[in-house]
Image 1 (cartoon, one colour):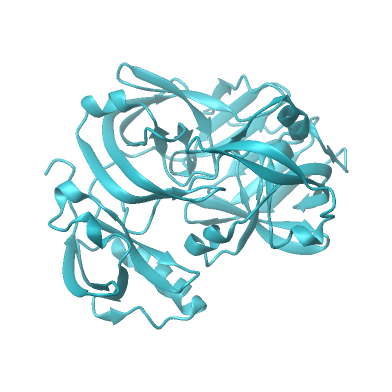
Image 2 (cartoon, one colour; image 1 turned 180 degrees about the horizontal axis):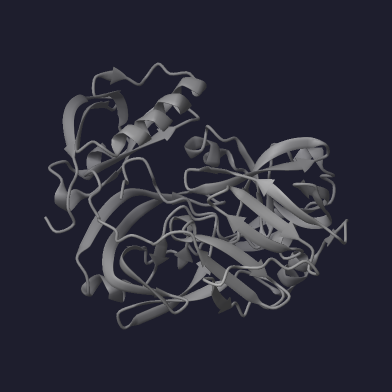
Length: 396
């Protein structure tokens, strides 16, 4: 489980008020008979797709945990901006604020055109900070997805969309789950670890595996605590503390999985993300209220052996920074969180242009799997340090 280069991206958001349900239903498919296959890019444990708005193609996140589509404010001018209205939203960290939304005349994904759907207008520049190699300009939410049957194939990296009269056929090995999805909103599945159970949002906008806000779990398992950046949402970059545990058996929608990592964040929503979901072909049939988990491979037991310090690239400034520390397992203190990394194993990482940063970081992530320690030169405005960071064990 490599946490040096991954923080948890959280793009789930929910809505307040009866008007939100009306907005989520708004819009219609132009073509009444379709069955298409759409390629996607799987980067940073997220699904990225090409979306056309006003004949211009943009990169969007495909997010089953987002109640509405999202349009970055930098491209909102391509749509009529005189119809902006406001709506209260609650994010994955349970914070609430008022945001602008508009009606989008046309959104096209893989040739499937939705007319008159609603999108939140947000400043997604902090996505670029972490996903600079992928210039994300919006989110396809489940107000788009509910207008078609959906199949997500992580192995072939395709999304299949079909009208409600065309049903995908899962294999005989697929697990059938009643979603209780209702007419709008997110799908939630029951998760259980030991005697503790909860409902978690089925969320392809979450780059982690399983996330819970139930602190009762902390007393039952060995725990690794960390401080620093905990994720990014539509609203902001989130900073705080997280705990990670490995449970002997976790049940998701009644299915048992063994020695699985769960992230505990008492201030956040409960989520099931891509590191779990990518082990299945996912089929969503809205009309019959069925979700199928079709196994691609066996989910292997987790080991929790992160590096004592975690790094992330800041693509807005072309720098790499310290973003998280497992303080109880490290000789270093939290005061180095936010420091700039100058060198990694004697390679100067301060002079990269954006393309070079992307190339270096993708190569570094691959090479990281075989490393047990790394030499760093880090600095802030007043000090420079040379440090060695090592892998740790949750049981140390």
